Length: 286
Image (tube, rainbow, N blue to C red; front, side, top):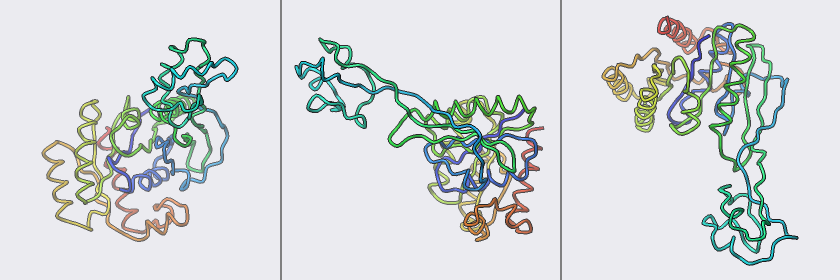
């Protein structure tokens, strides 16, 4: 079983469209949406939810009004200014628990947060494990670890060959959680200045954790000079550019219809390049 994580370094590069196409092209796999802060893979795969599970993480301070003597100590020491008029603002509370330790009458307790939900769903392309983080909640790295754990269990049970993970943008905690233990990383970038900058950062993250990386340049023909710059950079870094996907409005049309582009337009140049990309991924793995 090989886990392939698709990352981008930044949002808007077409990463989820690539994952949706891989859902069609790759056989005997489990799909994972690790972008729990803004999950959207389900919009292309139209899943039918089988399991709906709560995700509890982090804590928030709660003041018992019957015990509170309104001494004001907790308000004075809270560096996040989360306590006002002897009440806790749950959006401002960082869950550090310091106020609960210094309260003289033990009127403050720490309660666990319902931070989000994770789901196991069926699609016509295979099982999908995805999640939704609640508004203003943190610890998305833990939720990413949870959905990946569930995906591995399903893959082992079904004897799947691959796990295809749609990773989050950026290089922060959720990305690190998505990369941990993966076989390879497929980096989707675009020929823009921000795309080049963030590609350099995410390649550094992959190298730091010892994860082999490949690069797919999406919409490569909108700026050929920047595409050549990406290719030269990847060559110097020893990173293989496995696909150069042209710009085509058929991709937008497929998104509007809620379908992966390789299924919506099987004869398009984009589909042909995505098919070649998967062949190159297999060659890279073997």
